[in-house]
Amino acid sequence: MPERPLPARARSGPLALLACLALPASLALLGACAQEGDFGRPRAGAWNSLVDATGTLAARERGEPASAYPLTDEERTLRDRAWRFLMPAAGRDAFLDALANLTRARVLPPAWRPVDVAAYHDTLLAEPFRSPVSRYRRLSEDATADARLIPPFAAVAARVNDADVLRLRSLPFVKVLDDADVRHAAMRVAENRCLIAWMRLETGARAAGYRYALEHLLIEVPGPEALPVERTLAALDGRRALLDPLLPPDAALRCGLAGPEGPVAALPIVTKD
Image 1 (cartoon, rainbow, N blue to C red):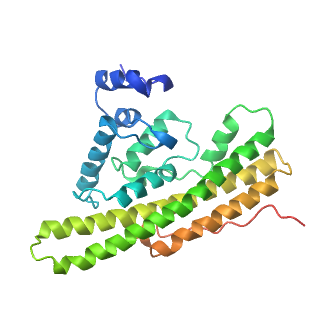
Image 2: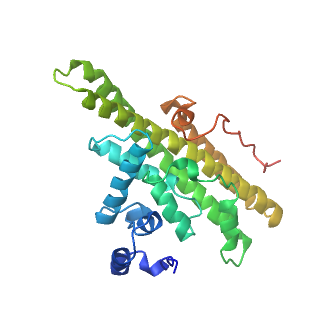
C-alpha cells in the first residue's frame, strides 16, 4: 500500500515525531518531518540536523562543494536569511514544500525544480477570497516582505565574502596545512558563493512570479489597486540590485544553477498618466 502524505496537523509536535518514527525513511518523509521555527525557518533539532547532514553527504556524492568545516556565525546567518527565498513563494502545497526543503538542504539538486512562473498566481487565486482587492493586497504584502529582507541578506553576504577573501589569503601563511585543509577551505568558499548566487537567482524568479501575477490580475480582475502593486514591484527590483555586486554575473551558471540564458528585464505594465 502506498504511503499516505502527512496531514497538516501531523507535521509538527508529537504527532510529527511519531509519524517520522513509524514510517519508513524516504526523501519526501525526511522533508515533511523537518520542523519549522520562527518565520518558517528550519528549527534547530534532531530532524533538521539529519536533513542538513544528509544534504551535505548528497551534495558531496554529486560532486558539489561540501566542506566538513563548521559554519561561522555569519555563514549560519547567511543560510537562515536565504531560507525564505529558497522555498516556494506560494508555499501552500505540503508535498512541494517538503521537496523544496530537501532542495534547500541540498539533499536534492536545485536543477530538479521546474521553473513555473505561474505558480504564485495560481495559488493566489486558488485560495478563497471575497474581494479581488485582497489578492492585490496579498501580492503587495509578499513582495514588500521580500524587499525588506534583501538588504540584510546583502549585508551579511558582503561580510561572508570578505571573510572568505581573508580565508584564502591566509592559506599560504599557515605552516602546517595538508591538502584536505586546503580543499575544505576552498569548498566552503564555493558553498558560500553558490548560496549567494542561488539567492540572487531565486529573487529574480520571485520577482518574475509576482509580475506575472500582477499582469494576469489586471486582466482577470482589473482595479486601481494595480498601481500601488506596480510601485511595490519596482521597489523590489531596486532592492534586488543590491545583490548584483556580490558576485560575477555568470556565478549561477558556474554553480550549475542556471542555463546560459540571462534574466529578462521586466517592464512596468501599469503607468500613471
